[in-house]
Length: 239
Length: 114
Length: 83
Image 1: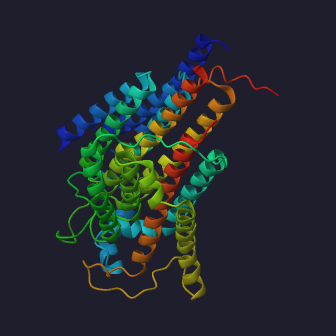
Image 2 (image 1 turned 30 degrees about the horizontal axis):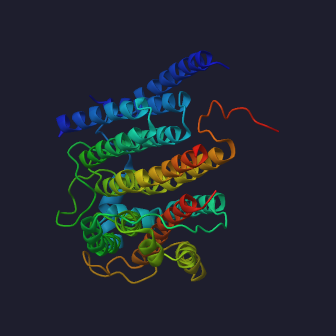
Image 3 (image 1 turned 60 degrees about the vertical axis):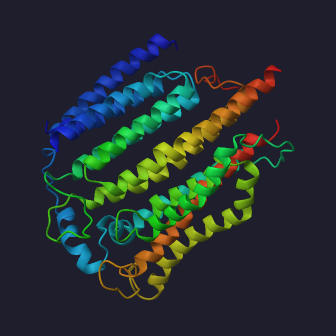
């Protein structure tokens, strides 16, 4: 099938799709006039019920915790797929050249702990201010990759041994599921909030949302580190 | 003005699809798939927006203040983080295809050898 | 607020076209990072700070690094086969 025919078929299909989507969009309420009841109800109810001032975090880890469980398992499966595809068992013998500029090495080596701490802070204060397990997990993972980018591969490898990262990732996903099953075993609904609530605005306020938040944060951070470890090993492996 | 974000979402989807169809490089294709995904993020956030509303985080502001919908934000934020790992999986597939066939061009890869 | 939203939507639309039209993959990776920055601006203007946080970490951090590592492997393999 030549390129011209392919483009022609795409043009016809895209036109049809655009028309159908335009017809669908015309039936939506105007932008800014949000009609549905759930947002209004949640904004009014979430802070008194769950004592979490970040309503989005309460939705992610409590009201719609089952969706978050599904997303975490997608993360696990995708990183598992990358590991399966790219692990070859061949070890690399040669060392890639470390970063030559002394200034970059020095500054990056001192910035990595700051970035790591900032990621941990974002995870911790998720239920109170904007942030949470997913955002902070990405930041923690990226702070460790900064070690590879700015210093050298040996430093990155020293901080992230593969068995530890594997264990953390699987363990955190299992902890998320385990907490849901635990509340089920205690006679409540799956993933129901079972710890006592505290007053609004401090760290211990929302009970088990904090535990789920940390499980998600550790899982996302180790998933990202594992993704980079697999890609780096594949990059370094001899052909 | 009232349908502009929805038109933007449709535009992003069509532009991404055009990139996927006319791509000559599997990694370029992966980035265009990411554009199609971001069309859904823009659409979701546009559905949940309320005029004059603030972010749904009630620290330091009174509880009755008008805020936008938190549910669509919850869906979007987990999706953004998870999508990059799925795109990493697509990239791993592209790298394996390059290893087997020596080319990243989808039109040269389209013949399946039995 | 409305003019700011309109400007950010136009930026996102233009950046998306720029990403698709860029043919060299290395150039496209950097234009992609700019596209995600425009998307982050759109998310902030739509009053979604959590989504903006995750988008900036992903789109300007993790995603370009992943693509660049893949590109480095492809180039290393092509250089190796040429020698």
